[in-house]
Amino acid sequence: MATLCRLANGFANTGNYAKAKLTYEEALRLEPGKARLVRDFAAAALNAKDTDTTERLLSSALSSTDAMSPAQQAEVHVLRGKLQLATKGRQADLNEFRSAVELEASCENIYELATAELAVAGPAAAERDYTHYRARCGNTPAVRIKIGRAYAINGAPDRALVEFRAAAVLDTHHPGVHYCIGAALLQASKSNFDAAEAELRKELLLHPNDRLSHAQLGHSAILRHNNAEAERDYRRAVALNPREASNFIELGQLLATSNRGPEAEPLLRKAIELTPDPSRNNYDIERAHFQLGRVLMKEGHQEEAQRELAIAADLLNRSRHQAEADLNGDSSSAANPLAVTRVPTEQEKSQVEAYVRGIAPLLASAYNNLGVHMANAGSLSLAASDFAAAARWNPTLSGVDANWGRAAYLAGEFAEAVAPLERAVRAHPGESELSSMLELSRQRASPTNRP
Image (cartoon, rainbow, N blue to C red):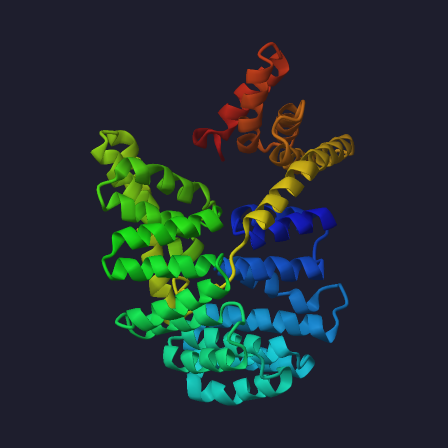
């Protein structure tokens, strides 16, 4: 279970919530109600705006069979409070955050209460709690930047600038401080080009490989209609972090709208490849599908172009629904350049991928053996679930599709049996038993044969 939990957290931390969710659910099936696992899963679901899953997980979290320390209970209260903010917005009840601080008056819990006050009641209401946060946790550059980011995300760039400039006074070399000032200046007014760019270039003088500053300079150059400069900055941002989809989207869109379709196409495809969860950043990947569709249309690839444009239209519709929900829920925008000041690095994503490659065959073998054990014990439905898990971790494991399909068929789960039996029959066309099971599964899975 610890291995699955580590894998799930790795997927979640590198932006692949779809895989994280499947892996968390697998782990919970093996160890239902495990408190640490439930909290990690709920946090990942909330971060991905999967509020239904978050609510389901948190509804019984405090009554878990695992004994929880006050700090762990406080963590659940904070998650419940954040769920209320996500679903109720300014109508959210702050008592969950207050309960967390009463249980554990940590720096993080005090900050969460202050930031919730900011989201619900505005800057004036939050000021007292932020003062408490500074007094409790120190008047340091990191603390001032954290407060400033909260103000910026909640639509108060002027107050954010006060905090960021205070951080710069404390330590003008602190990583990210000049980036934050520059981004907040642009948020306050798009006319603040010169002052904002001066701050961003200060950041790059101190930290030449700051990919966020390069991306923000690219954005600023586009606003000034300086496409050549924007291209240089976005190419630098892409080179510094070749796993961050947003930079590929921006550069691809810039080239596509400059009639450089052949150059834009691989960038847009890379952005899509890097975004397994299309809801990330409020469905921002819609722009890549749309621009790719237009590029393909110009190149004469009508069928693929229509597919991409249809995907773009669907994602745009979803993002509009999300925006409507945000009017009564979480009002912060993921597109805010200060919403995320750290993205997963190439090394971090590579580490997760390497860990998956190393552990996946072992997990597949373990699940396959567990499936055999369950089948021998007569628990055919559980056996089918275990064989399905084995196939997810290693689709090429010998006999796994036959095992899965046979167990699902014998459990009467005919619709589930069809796909693995089809693969098993293709691999072993002479297996008459498998062919017979497949034919019967198709018949019984048909809507006309359902009761």
